[in-house]
Image 1 (tube, rainbow, N blue to C red):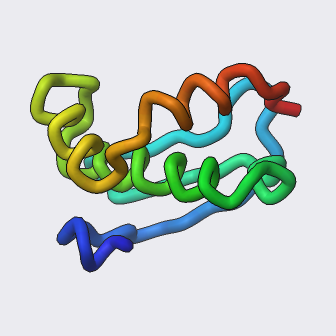
Image 2: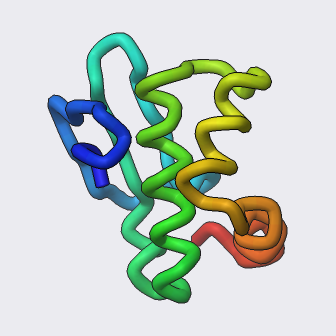
Length: 89
């Protein structure tokens, strides 16, 4: 997926997180995912990965960011809504 978006992930973490599904450090190219994501539907995991990879291109939730996200994951609004209804931990 990173090649498709033209981004490089320098460091990839998977760890237990109490309040977030994921986080990203745009400047360093670090991406971190919650271990609980493995228990969620595969399409939600894909949404989370695409969401964070888009942040490597655009760090803020700007118009440019949502244009990128809509291009690479058109159903992001539905996925986000469903994921936000699920418990994080």
